Amino acid sequence: PSCHSPPQPPPSLVCNRGPGEYCCCLLNLSIFTYEVLMCAPSILDTLIVALCFLSPIAAQHATATLYNLLSVEVYHFIIGSKKPLIVALSAPTRFIKDMLKALFDLALYPLNCIALVELNVVSSLFMLVKKDGRRGLVEDAMMVIAQVARYDENMEAFWRVNSVSI
Figure (cartoon, rainbow, N blue to C red):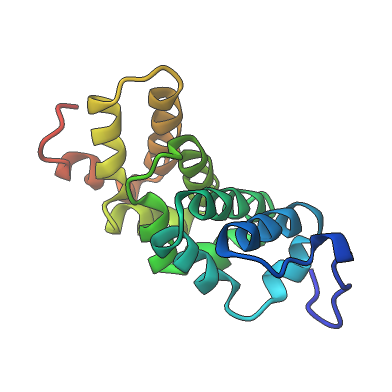
């Protein structure tokens, strides 16, 4: 995707309202014109703010926006290199399914797997599997764990998980 003179979003996608609706607009842009969104300066920083400091609905839209952006393979490294974004994404949330989808897409890129290990996301996923037990969530968490585990250098993370029986 090129950032030279990106097309303008349709007027129906432009939003001049509160944070929740702003994040909803970002979500719409991530579906229809992801190149425009990724060319926007500080878009990833904006998503970090939405995940950490705005309303739960804004955080949900930000998580879904990340999931949509991660569906484009060339963005895996760009998004994964933003460590605060990974930390914000893996924080406890009511939108666990969306978080797990985005983490899975992040784990598709090998260098992001290293970051997921270093930032203790794997440990959090093991705890989710052990303590939550809801059908669907356990399977999704295990898919992320399996995706990270496919690289030999990440296997040590599984042995460092202290409070989880493996």
